[in-house]
Each structure stands twice: as C-alpha cells, then as structure tokens.
Length: 189
Ligand code: AMP
Image (tube, rainbow, N blue to C red):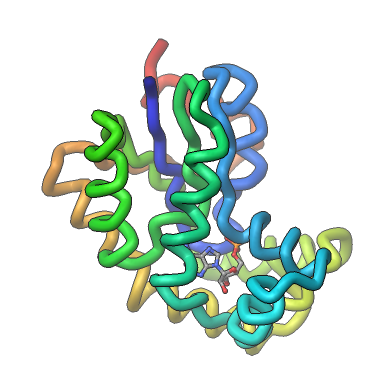
C-alpha cells in the first residue's frame, strides 16, 4: 500500500496533480475540501458546519475533520493506497493520521510539497474563481486569510514529516506536465 500526502498552499495545484497521480499509481483520492463541498451541496449537517468556516477561509475544527477523513478511508478497504489532498492541515491532524494508519498496519510513504510563491498563488486563485464557482476563491480577503492560515497552522505540518525523513519539496511553478514529471520522479515507480 502506498499512502501519499500532496501538500502545499491553496492554489499550489494539489487538485490538478492529484487527478494524474490517482490514475498513474491507482490510488484513491481523498480531498477534504472536496468532501466538505459535496456536503455543502447536499445540505448535510456537516456541510452547514463546514460552510461557516470555509466561507471565512478558516479551518474546519480538527475533531470534525479527522472523524470525517477516517470514515472516508474506511469506505475503501480494498484501496492500494491513498492520496491525501488538503489533509493533514494541522499538527493534530498529522498525529491523528499517524495513529489511525498505524492501527491498520499502514503509514505515510511520502509527503510531496508543491512550492509556489505567494504572488502566484493569488493570481491562480482569482483566475480559478472564474470557473470553480468557489466563493472562497472569488474574494481577495478570504484568499489572504487562507494563505495566512496556511502559513501559521499548516506549514508547520511539514516539519512533522521532515523529521520522519518523508518530506519532498517539489517546484510547483511551470506547466502542469512539467510539475507532474517532477512529482513522478520524486515518488518513483
Ligand atoms: P481546499 O479545497 O483544500 O482548498 O479546502 C477548502 C476549505 O475547506 C479550507 O479553506 C478549509 O476551510 C476547509 N478544509 C479543507 N481541508 C481541511 C482540513 N484538513 N482541515 C480543516 N479544514 C479544511
């Protein structure tokens, strides 16, 4: 089983690159942002709760997010591995993921971190707003809040995997194909 974390700030290209990696490595893609958005669309209780945080660019509380992620993993007992996209976003989430995977005799193989300068992230997110329909992409204040939250709460998660020798930084600027190539070289066969 191969479990990968695709890491990086909002707008780094995690969703775009996940689509390729899922196909190439036959993995199950779990994007916590996508799952929250599906719940918002379905007007579930979880969706209503998540929306109140997402609209402000804040993180959904750890307890709710971790429970949801574990339940999603448990829906795929036959998976050859997972790509975690947008999770873990706090050190508490990373620790919970370690414990959860360990209880299944599993672990994270690697964290691939897409590195993109802040100015480029903002340009990309505003461009994405034209097609994504995401309210959190369309508002420059919410974009700034998401980037600040990333810098303060999420970036430290990289240290957790660095300490375990699992961190791989990838230059996230360039064509989609070039970045895919860098990722596959980093991940290996
Ligand atoms: P994303 O689609 O990854 O950009 O996530 C969109 C929004 O969903 C974030 O700004 C958060 O409000 C929420 N979210 C997604 N993943 C997480 C997570 N792992 N922990 C807390 N909130 C999350």
